[in-house]
Length: 198
Image (cartoon, rainbow, N blue to C red; front, side):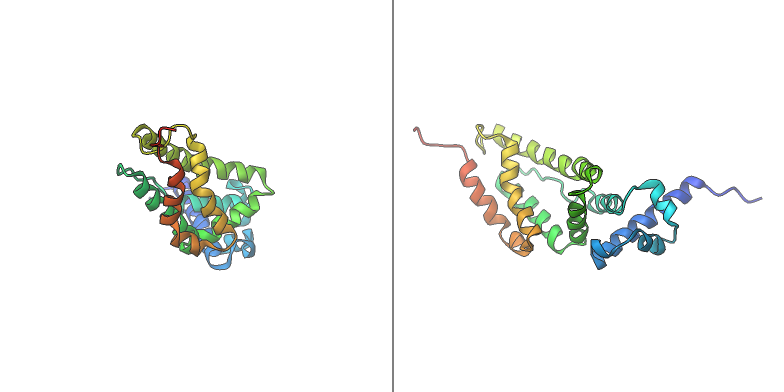
């Protein structure tokens, strides 16, 4: 006697196939050239299966991107804030430029400009957790006396990461990778504790 098919396992296989197909297609063709039809065909599922779980192509790609990233952007804590920032910013820059994540990231961000739900999901699943982790590391550096206490750490996050994304979206990502260490040192010039009496 054969057992009945496990619907949960079948659903997970379909979900995995869809995410893999979406990420592969976007990585190879670019976000704009990928369609729900194309994702469904490569995944071996019907379009209704995709729309049962996701409301748009952007939502599918965002989830695929999240799974691809995993803990890749985790913030190190060696006790040396300059070294940790350099390690993390270099990793982010390299993935955005040379990694398979690049096309997905740009495509989702472009789509999110006209899709409030996608922007909300992007902020909640990628942006805000990353910012919170960075702020926690910066807070510990402030407490250790490595950074000024009179500059809010959310401002520090902007100072360190805005140039990375600016260069990426304008097509100068290679420069962001090369200049990661310089960027950290330049920003730290203004964020180190002041030692003068005046």
